[in-house]
Amino acid sequence: MTDVTVDAVDAAAYRVPTDSPEADGTLSWDATTVVVVTAAAGGVTGLGWTYAGSAAAGVVEDMLGPVVAGRSAFDPRGANAAMSRAVRNVGRDGVAGTAISAVDVAVWDLQARLLGVPLHRLLGGSGEPVEVYGSGGFTTYDDEQTTRQITDWLERCGVEAVKIKVGESWGSREGRDLERARLVRRLIGDERGLFVDANGGYSVGQAVRMAHRYDDLGVSWFEEPVTSDDLAGLRRVRNAALADVAAGEYGYDLPYFARMVDASAVDCLQIDATRCGGVTEFLRAAAVAAAHCLDVSAHCAPHLHAAFVGVVPNIRHIEYFHDHCRVEEELLFDGAAAARDGHLRPSDAPGHGVSLRTADAERFRVAS
Image (cartoon, rainbow, N blue to C red; front, side):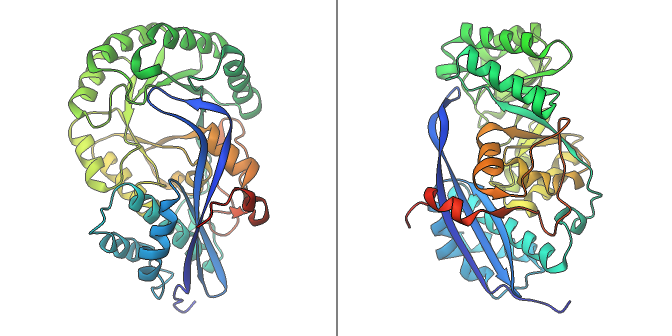
């Protein structure tokens, strides 16, 4: 196929209310905002998305679209670099990073669709399924709601590990954290993995003490026991806990991940393609982790990650996050099939195989 240039890049934001009030150790929310990007070329449209504030759509329209339009649709890495240059004066992290991520995914999807191949094939993958773990267990849930969610993951999705939120109210409810962890251990039995995520809610000393309590419950994954900005604190918890310490979901650029692994702060590096710079930067960050003999885990956005992370040799699993599964599988997208036997399988359709249900999405659209 001769070279094809990108004709247009567009974005829209959709605010989807949660199905019940949700909170973790340090934040509460009642809606999830999805920013959807399209990139068109040669009569074909690629789709990307990110979970971010609606302001990301404005960054796409005002700053990124103009530098991607007119570029080759077969050069997503070049487009990614051009976008990073374009946001120099407003900052690459945060909102701009999420906008770059969504456009990057859209351009990769566009290239694969133009070539008529699945994204994982374009990247050299064989289409192997990737393990997922159930993620939710919000601090706002009572025991009944937690039980329903865990049971659904086990029976419908066949997951071998589940994760709940702890560090409730900035670590001030240790007793309830432990009670909820004990409940989940009873529900899943002794053989399945029990993960906890404090979202930075504990202090360093407190996290070390809680790590020992979680060790007694066989917790094997302790996510953000302290803020991910405190690399020395993460390392201290890592040295004290039997569980793997994980962090990295707030990484917006490659140097962030390099600093985290250089500091020996984690056992498994979390990477989020909707924040770090899309497919392009996810693959680069995974290579940084591999150079330090570390696995990586894909943070949230399960059906975006399922389309390509199987090509990453050091991928451990994908976070099957409740809010994003609901958005992707039930409300906004076609082609996003639920996990089976504890795994997600990449689509064999061209691109990532996911499309927006435009008519269904309109009721959630944020006015621009």
